[in-house]
Image 1 (cartoon, protein in one colour):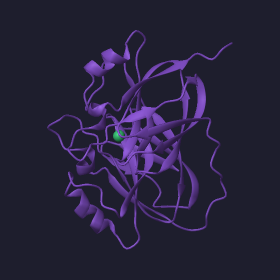
Image 2 (cartoon, protein in one colour):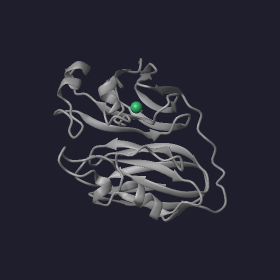
Image 3 (cartoon, helix red, strand yellow):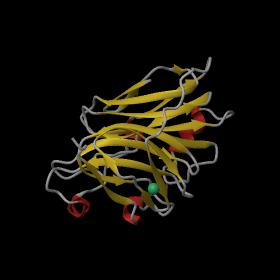
Image 4 (cartoon, helix red, strand yellow):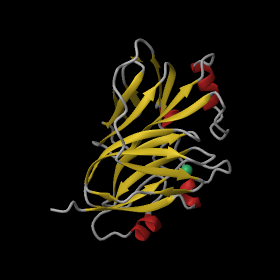
Length: 246
Ligand SMILES: [Cu+2]
């Protein structure tokens, strides 16, 4: 399943078969975007989703499960996650904003439903080669070498969490990155390479990524009930990807 992100919409098939599905997001816009995937309980409709959207600061209602989707990517980049999709109504959303005084992209049109229905596909979940555990408010990160990884991302916390991953340029320390970044923009030279969209407590998903050697920052931008993004509560850690031994 390929989802094309532009300023400010999602393009994707209206219907997708249930089962294990690789979800590839491609950012063809000029802004950074992510694609948070929510499953809507049966009995609820897009009208309920729109009513929920009108209350952006309210807690996620129980009939909405946040099941992953793609972490933020810079323009021109893509990201792959693997989810086991149950039949039902799903919604993709982008909560990023261009500046603190501008509306989130979800208010500019980046909210898009699709239906998972039909015969279940036969694909099986790829075997994970590493694991990232998320909790309130930290990450348990693996040691990684450069190359392709299938990383199981699991939420062991009581709030929703995500991994948003940024690659730092040579010479920039994690501390310098943290001092310079804002929710709307990253420092010069930093590339936002993706990650796994937010997950409700207890859920897991798979992030497939080819990592170049270097230093990365792993962040969670999900807001706490008090509105503070988790990144400000310590949910930010460096991840050093070592070169592969020759
Ligand atoms: Cu978090």
